[in-house]
Image (cartoon, rainbow, N blue to C red; front, side, top):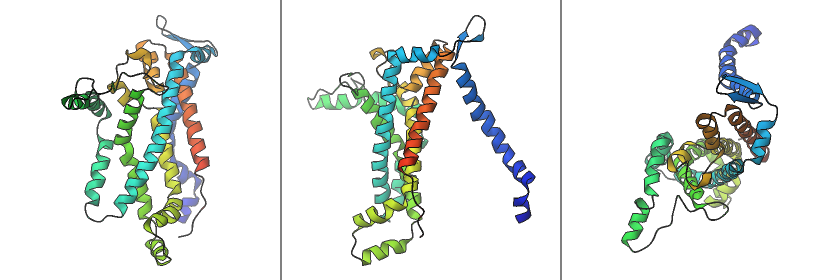
Length: 296
């Protein structure tokens, strides 16, 4: 085995399939999109013409793009903060119960594996102006809010509603990651803390949180990337032609420009902006959650 690990040709042969797959599926499309972002696509000639930075200057002037960035950044902050708090809370509670742990864990994680398209349609009916929650409120004489059409405020109500639905669907993923990390902590550390007079809350703060910090960074990176490329719930819960695109995020704006208006170069420029934001967000998170190595 040692000879095999020292053989560079053997290492290359074993790594080649993964490298080829990575290059074909991720690296080549990204490089192609970057090139197309500097071009204009002609439907008549089916060809791309190099136009330099025009797509990026048009993005700067596009009011829908500014709205999309604002909404995407809201999802980024809301998802990272809410899933961090709720994920840690649920992981801490479920780790300390014995009966029914697997049942509650499966119930909370179940929305993660369900179709986002189906869940989007389900919640669209729940927050409908005439059905769902508003219909229940009407029975007791209360007029419900316009959940999906109230555009007052800097962050409009529909964005908070979709953010809540996204939290409900994906908090199970963060919870499972935190529970996996917590289960690997040596129990003797907790026993020693209890002997020294620490409560469970203090043990969680001074033992659990520092030791799961690397997993917190990983979970927040996944949440950040997922929230920036958020598409399916927004697309299914809202009317794309309603409210003058006040509900757009970067992914829906990219989809509309590329597949509805055939502006493939402009859509590629939006995609490049999305990639840059993902890299910036993950870089900041990795820097904030940079951790030392603990001996356990």
